[in-house]
Length: 295
Image (cartoon, rainbow, N blue to C red; front, top):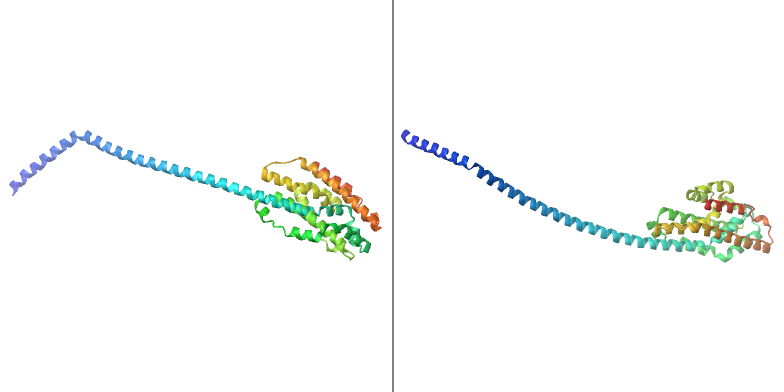
C-alpha cells in the first residue's frame, strides 16, 4: 500500500508544479481577458443606462409638453371665465347706477331735518322725487343679481370697489324711502358708520372728509367708485389703466349734482317748502372729493 502512495504523490506534485508554471506564464493573458470581459460588461450596462436616460428624457419631454398644453388650456378657460365675470359685474353696475340720482338728492337734502319731520307736504315732496325711479322694483332686481362668477374669478380690489358703490346707492335709496315714512324721529332706525368704513378702507385719504362732514360724505364718492369698478376691471382683465377716467368721473359728478339741484329746487317751489331742506355745505364736500381724486 505505501508503495502505491508515493508515485501518486509525486505525480500530484509534478502536476501542480506544471499548472503553477502554466498559470504564471499565462497571467498577463488571463488578466487581459478578464479585464476585457469586465469592460465589455460595463459598456453594455452603460449603454443600457444611457438608453434608460434617453427614454426618461423623452418621457419628461412628453410630461412637460402635456403640462404646458394643460396650463395653456387652463389659462384660456380661466381668462374666458374672467371675461364672463367682468361682463356680469358691468351689467350689475349698470343696474345699480339706475338709482344713482337718489345719491345726488341725498347730497343736497338736509337729512337731519327730514328725519325729524313728518309734515305731509314733506312726505309728498319726497314721494314726488322717488316716483320716476320705481325704487322697490329696482332694488329687487339688484338683490337678484347672481354674483357667483365675479366672486370666483375677479380680484378682491374690483369686488370691493363694486360693493362700496352698490352699498352707497342702496343706502341712498333706503334713506329716501325712510324720508317718505309718515313718522317722526326716523333717524333712530339708521345704522351709522357702515359707509364711511368701506370708503376709508379703499381711499384712506377720505377720512378727513368724513371727520368734517359725517357719514353723508360717502355720497360724494359715488361717481369715483362707479369709474373705479371699470378701472379695476380693465387693469385686472387687460392689464391696462386709463388715467383719463378720473377726469371723466369729476365731470360726471358735477353734471349729476347740477341736475339734482335743479330737480330738488323746482320740486321745493312746487310743494311750497322752504330752502332749509337743502344742505348749505354740499359744494364744499364735493370740492374735497375732487381734490382727493386729483391727488
